[in-house]
Length: 424
Image (cartoon, rainbow, N blue to C red; front, side):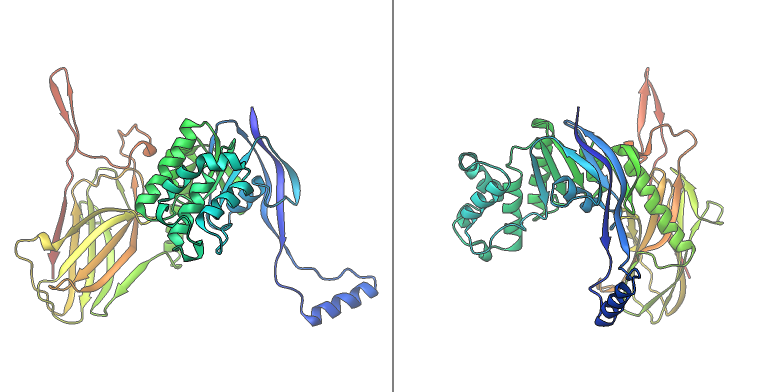
């Protein structure tokens, strides 16, 4: 049975600030003449959104910034209303949107628990029953009777999250709140969410830019783009489509020589001249097969001689998850490099990543580990599925060395390794 029904909703906003005096006078004169005054343009934050959510379903809502995700959640939480269309929500809703925004600075932690719990629909007896658990989860036993204006920002969001997730609700609406606090508390937040999902059987709507989090927690996902639903289905399928769209945009930007999301820092002593992906035969390519050799050739210029510099070359995903790397520091006899042009190759005999788009990162250090140059997304290349590959990409990220034993006979797969070679 559907617990949420969204029927062809549209949300429009008027763009721009208030009219200037000149524009206001012009519009007044237009009305006096019987003409239609000039209005500010309308912006559709959501455009004809239509879907249902079944009871107990965990739905992830993903998309780039400005896609309409938070606008949709605010309407489902009854914070905002649609311009057109209808929303039907059956059951008690607990919105975890802008956690900590409702805390009153001059009140103590204890007073804020009772105030915010009441706002979220909890009875006083229910708040009292859960009080110790709320305080313990937020790790604020020593400070609970201190005004929260003296709390750090991390302490405030811990308290806000703890209060919000203590509500016994039929529907939990979560907007980017699993990244609150330090890493240890983020782990607690994640465990609490999994407990709510698996233990309580609540219906959950989750917005997150952490796509792997959506893959793990959600059974279904919706992909928004410019206020419209462009995909709705199994979470793994929709998130892979999101990655594909993101990677295609990055590749398109690079091919059209537009600005890509590069991160470069330099001391001015190293100048990067070019990066190429090479085939086994040494030809420049943009794509390799999963498990095939990866050769990254880097040409660079040193503006001064360096004694035993360290060079690091590696790869990462388009969302900056580091994957592989190797350093010339591992060489027994690291060479000195004179001023001028040099060339280095980073070679992975069997690149172990599944099909997708990946990036090259490079760093240079002097013999004292002083940074000379560091850069990410310096070259983008793609990996295609191996011909005999049968597993779907979302089932793993690595093709690592394995062995199978069948009826006493061993069947090995390709090994992987990293090497670096350098020449002047």
